Structure formats: C-alpha cells, structure tokens
Image 1 (cartoon, helix red, strand yellow):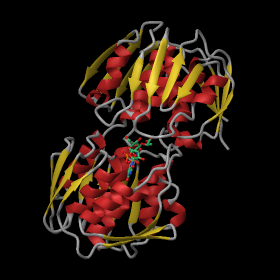
Image 2 (cartoon, helix red, strand yellow):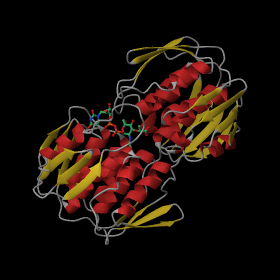
Image 3 (cartoon, rainbow, N blue to C red):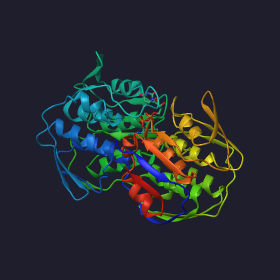
Length: 416
Ligand code: EPZ
C-alpha cells in the first residue's frame, strides 16, 4: 500500500496545469454510450475512478481505445445492460449509467453503487425521478432492475439539488419521447459540461446551470469530440495549499468562475489573487486570520468537496472558524487525524469548531476518503517535521500524481 512521506514547511512557487475534472469526465463517459457514432473525449485524467468507469463501459461491450490522453469510445458492439457488481460497488459514478442505459437500451440492471464513505449516499432521488419518467424499477437483493420501455417526458421536482440525480435524469430524458423539465436541478459546472457534451452529439438541453433544466427528447445522437472542463476541486486544493504554505503559483486550465466562493475567502486570508478566463494566479503574503464561518452548500455555495481542505487551512488561522457541513452527513473523518497533528477541533452535530494554532506537527495519519486525504496532505505540507499518510489510494481517486505536482512547486513530498 502506497504512502506519502512529507517534510513540511516549504514555500510553493511555480505553475501547474489543472487536470480535466473527475466529476465532469465520469458522467460524460456514461453519456457517451447513448451515441450512434464514435466519441472522442480529450485529455481524460488518469484518476482510478475514471479507470474503473472505462472498465465498466468495456464490460457492457463498448470498444475503448486510448490515444495519448484521449479516450475513443465505439458503441457498436454493446451487448449487455447489466453492470458487473464488483466494479459498480467501487465507484459512486456507476449510478450514472442508469439514465443512458434506460434512454438508449430501455433496460438496466446494476447493484447499489459504491463511492467514498462520507455518508449513506442514498439513490432515492435518482430512482423516484426515473420512475416519474415512466421507468419501472424494482430493488431486490441489493440489485436494481430497470425497465425503460414506456418512458416519456415529464416534470420532475427534486427534493434536493442532487448532482448525480440531475445528471442521471438529463441523460435519461435525452432519448425518450417528449419534453422533460427538472425543477430544483443542481447547478454545478459539471452539469453544464454534461449538457454541452450531450448537445454536441445532437441533444436538446436548455437551462443547465440554472435550477430549471428543459430536455427535448431526440431520436438519436451522433458521434463527437469533446474536452471536459478543468477540475475545480483539484484547483481549489492547490489554491489552499499556497494560502497555507506561502508562495506564488499560477494555475492554468481552470475557469475562475467555478471557484468564486473559495477565491473570496482566500482574498480575506492574506492572498493576492488575479484571474483570467482560464487561469488563476495566487500569491500568499503571510499569516492569515481565521475565516470565522464556513457553510457548505450546493453550487454556487461553498463546495462540500473543499470542506476538508479548507479545514486544514483553518487549523493554523489566527482565531476560530466554525465549519458546517450541510451536504453530507458524515464528512468530518479528517478531524481525528488533524488533531493528531496538533489541531484544536471539536465537533458539535454537523459543525466543526476549529481554534487556530501557531503550528501543526508531523505525525503518522491515515486517509479515510478522497478529500479527507487531501486535507491531510495540506496539513503535512505546513506541519513542522515529517508526516506519513497511509491509504493514499483514496487520494489517487481524484488527484493525478499529487506528489509530482506538489514537488514541482517545491514541496518535499514522496510516494513510498
Ligand atoms: C457528486 O456526488 C460528486 N461526485 C461528489 O464528489 C460531490 O461531493 C457531490 O456531488 C456534491 O457536490 C461525483 O460527481 C462523481 P449529490 P453525488 O447527489 O452526486 C443526498 C468527490 O469528492 N442524496 O449531490 O453523490 C446525498 O446523500 C465526490 O469528488 C439523496 O439523499 O452528490 C447527499 O447528502 C464526493 N438521495 C446530498 O444529497 C439521492 O438520491 C448530495 O448528494 C442522491 C443524493
């Protein structure tokens, strides 16, 4: 099992190109099975979650070839609508295949999806939404059996703006008769990217990025070539790394509009930040005050995926910060590990109270999920002495060669 070994206290200087977004690439790969023609997805990141998604597509008969960073998908020989349980259990994103399989093949069978252990991760919004579109869905012995023969457009109200449910419903509605409206849809940039991808294949989706999305069913979708957006959570993690360690870094292949909430907070944390349409330049000019209050919300609010990273930063802010995690019910698994490194944090229901300390100290810690793992890397970079991080496979799910990127900026981090 790989570990990270970090010697903390180095300033970060230089430039990084941000990888393509994991959470945009995964639904786009799922949607690609709806096309009659060849799909080329450019600059596909080599996160382990993406590898598993490609294996799932191959398992139903998709022909996947790779050319440099591009992935070419040919659907002519899809011959199964049942997803292999051992793969679907590994990634949450396997659930994104329900919509496309129902839209194109009118049938799907899959086991409950896996993913990070940050909460129950129910799929009721997905299933009830698809049932509203006329799908017959039976849940039995841990499997979900879907029959999409009589699907039709409808108005679907989401109780919560779920990212995955919004994506599944957009994909299901793309190829069925009639018009579908999703009310209280998620507004994340990855939703807009998925809609743009499907429209580039001939889909008719309007309103993505807003709370009401309208999808006109079409008969078929053609091939396309598409480059998904840059990963705003990876970019946000690096911005926080600079804010914590001091330094000056430029990030490219990232639209700063996706990170307005974080950028505003960092500008109040002794950072100068310049932005252009596809790049962000950050310079950290020293000790920063604690941010006071942070509430995670669906987009465009402060992203839940940056809650653990920004918590690592607040452990050395001057003052106290209360972070409320309003999206997932158990996403504070980084707290005991940060405390081992000298942080002062208490948890009260869905809030974590962080009293800033002068210094963190290196320790042996363990990653429990993707973003909690990232927060431990950030803490190790700023801690005095050596930090070992175990179970870094969690981190590899969403950060491409994190140690290589950080070392290129001057950090002393090794994969052992
Ligand atoms: C997506 O997960 C992302 N994953 C998550 O990123 C991200 O944290 C999350 O959106 C919120 O932004 C991918 O895109 C692959 P949700 P998803 O449905 O779709 C509840 C990362 O670190 N809910 O918006 O699963 C759910 O329990 C990962 O990259 C239901 O109750 O998130 C949660 O409390 C982690 N019923 C809330 O909604 C449902 O049917 C938000 O979940 C679906 C969700």
